[in-house]
Picture 1 (cartoon, rainbow, N blue to C red):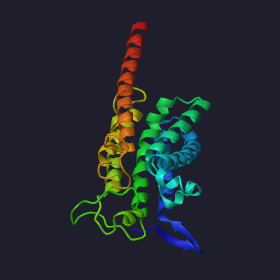
Picture 2: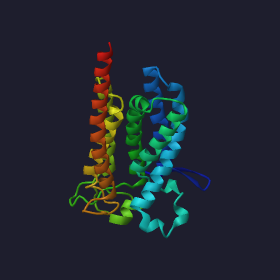
Picture 3: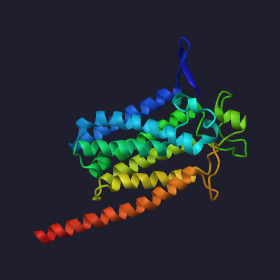
Length: 265
């Protein structure tokens, strides 16, 4: 685990920033492959990858600042743009990245739901899995103490060590990255079924939010917000509820269209 890979003069090359950049590049590459395989819109993937990637970084940072670490940043406003120090919230990144994607598809007259199914959902979750490697290398998004002699002991230079010292911590970020890979495979399998438009992306939101809700019980880098739950858990519950409703609605809507087409014939 190394926060700094090497130095160029006095300028540090951080593992966090390098792996985070790699996650965006590889997610875009995955999206290009899937779009090329489908035969639609692959020429738009590099551009939308840049726009959504930048929007995702901004959204992830702002979400972390205002929902997770405002107690600190309200006294250190000038450090808000210092993304290389760590502190990025995936939920905010996905939200603002999705908004950027919707705007792009509307401008270029691309079917938003179809594009999200073919490209966005599988690519986003594999990017998230790689991004959790950055958290591990940086020593953030860490778990709380396991209470035993098992777990991760972080180096003294990390935030995790500053908070808990030499106590072994739950490997929350590692497990989330592994679960993200499982979700990636499940989404690829679901894409082969006779699904309604939009259901792949909605299923991604439901599966990830469900995993995130339970993993948050192991996180030790921030406290609860209300009802004994953390902000990410409350957001996850809202996404799960809305997602289930949308998943059912999209299926019902597609079935109605199918019946109407049969009648017209």
